[in-house]
Image (cartoon, rainbow, N blue to C red; front, side, top):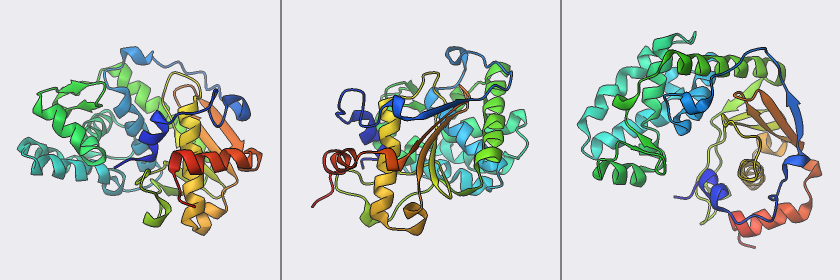
Length: 276
């Protein structure tokens, strides 16, 4: 299975990317808060992004069961593959509450370690079979390896709070964890799940310490293009692409009307690989 995220990471893009950072309007928000450098965080970057996104959804009123549905599906997959201890984490969803208390944040971090068992089960199985409890390349870490310190918890809390403030200004959100009809995908791109939809914008959340890059902008463009092939009204009304980075507290936006037709056609043909 090749997801939008995976394809965008490995796509052979023209110099500077199909969509360049300079094309996006940049808005910096100053809340006076300073985060601890991510190199000192006691959680893998891959999991950090999911934790911030999922807890943001939770704070916005989505149930823990719905927020962590991929995590719980991953638990079941891990259990079926012989890792019986995985099932012990199934009840963590009932112990995650709104309000961003320390234990809810810790539980969320543990649950997201199982997402890979759903999103990329073969990588999870390879890592487990070689007893690699942690692999930066395969993005695997087991919940018993989670040991959050106070500063990491505070970083997570601050980024979620920034995200909630962001949505007060740029919402309301009409859908979280959105995906597309099966027929909108191709043999090359077979799956994909975006972060947030508002009435006129596809939004993606990133928690990197680096500014916007071509992989991130291509991922957004792919979502929009697939949405146009999906044909649903919610995608037809999209006028902008946006990325919010709560670590940097920066917003990037681009009107789709400013994207040249030849760029859209190139991504359709060479990246997503729609048949004519």
